[in-house]
Image (cartoon, rainbow, N blue to C red; front, side, top):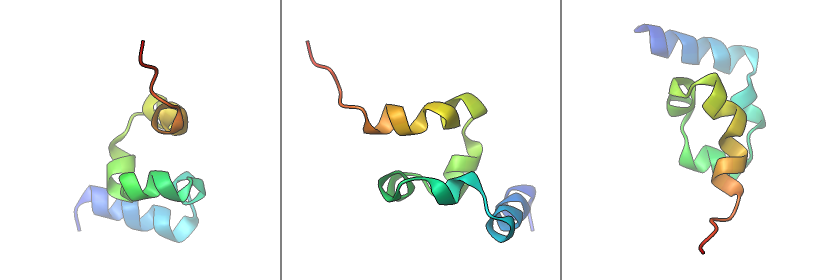
Length: 56
């Protein structure tokens, strides 16, 4: 098992912040993709994905 799969397995067993994400975000990002995000990206993920785009 590679380290990313091991980390994913550990998070699935212990409960993790990914599980608390809204379903539309989980439809866009798999757990493995979410694990690759930086802490900063994770912190702003819901806002960046759910806020409407502003067109001027």
